[in-house]
Length: 161
Image (cartoon, rainbow, N blue to C red; front, side):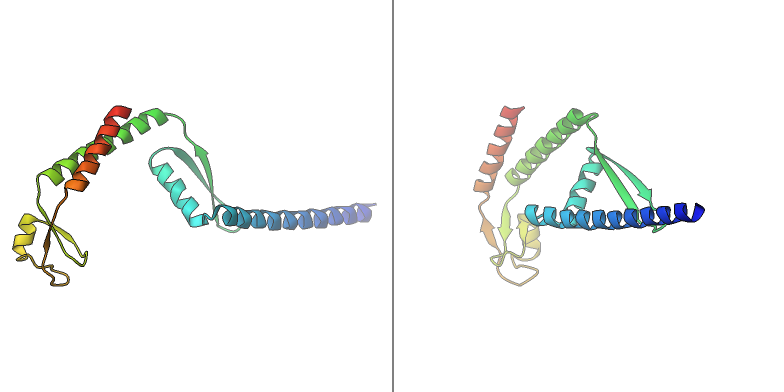
């Protein structure tokens, strides 16, 4: 009787192992298909999740597998304080736009024709209007189109807020 019970347990174990291997194969195939369909790599997904984590939009729990030593990350969306975080990001973006507009208004720019770099007037005079990277003569850059774009973005932002 004990031998018969052991054989049945052995057969059940083999069946469970086979089912587990099949499930692992299906999961791996599903991951590959999802990546192919969406054209998003696993590294891109990880990068996005960590950016969301840094900005407190997700919660991450790490677990280490005792047998293999591999880490498993469990991710959950964190809705607590999300509106506060979004408002903070909007204010930060607005401040950065205004600072950039002031910088563009208060400076005269020279650029390398080879697109090596962009210098303000004081830096250009220090290099005698020569590109320090390639040696080409620097040329004046009219930044009015960029300033207009910044004005437009700031205006749109103010209307939205």
